Length: 126
Figure (tube, rainbow, N blue to C red):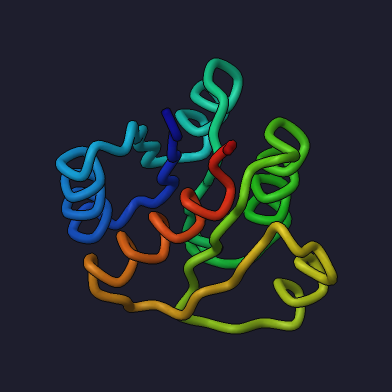
């Protein structure tokens, strides 16, 4: 079964998205901070990691390091970065990595669920 990790501190979005994915039958974990994300990334395989690019409040070295840790620990996972703010640093970090997608915030929960299910269907083993 596919497993998703959501890394975001916005409880309004993450709570609803988490509940919606669980009800849809998607095994889903939630991390509200980088420390919890590290624990989960170390203990589970994920097909998709959806994270707030500005989880730490701004795109700084800590935020970029979290993106790098996700890519290093789960190199085969699709990564969806949610952001309300575009930046040169984020564009430079994402570069040509085809397994990282940047999605503008805000997005409705049904759209995010559809997006996640699309990635999981595309990456699911046949």
